[in-house]
Image (cartoon, rainbow, N blue to C red; front, side):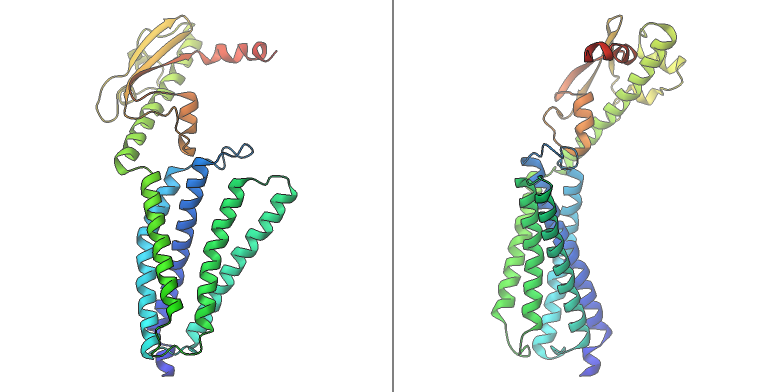
Length: 310
């Protein structure tokens, strides 16, 4: 029995359970955090607390992989306990269970310290409270489960109703988190379209820099975009066309200091509160479909800035 208790098999299962638990817990927390970021603004931390679709997508990916692993591995662990292949007093079981309890305690303690610190700093917000409650709930759930498990008097041949209840609670939380991530996140097609539109805007940014450089050297706007490719050295032919469709961007001079760039966009970024798209939404706002974006020469804007401030 001692050989079974300390066998590499159960050491492997407990370590894999611990790792998958950490990924599952963090993924559930990240999904909840991003949903909170999306719908509850924070005036003091607008950039840091903005919605990030890539983080949500990573959390969803981690949850899809880690949660089934955690549930399956724990099934084999508790099946071994039930059959007596692993005793409740096994060293590997005690050490790793108490380690999980330690990690959960540290997380709960850290969030309580954070709550007090934020309160003393006068920055208490509903967003922070919700995130704290999510973190404490996840940590407390893991802590209470493993505390109950390690304190059980009898494990062999007994089907513990509390263990079964924790299993169903965990399953419900995982399924709810998956559903929320799929509902509030971007589907693969939308994510690809946003990336393609951002690639267009990256090209627009390069074209804008080249136009400003051309204006400084020639004191006028270029007649067409092909001139930029020939004279500035900053523009390649691939920067003047849509990366997927190959359509040429439309360029038109509006007056001696203003021009517009036009393209067919797959999405709109006017109401996009995604952290990684904030720059484009402010500097290159566009509607879905064919849209034109007007720009002034930046050198003139910098010269006029002191006047505008006064």
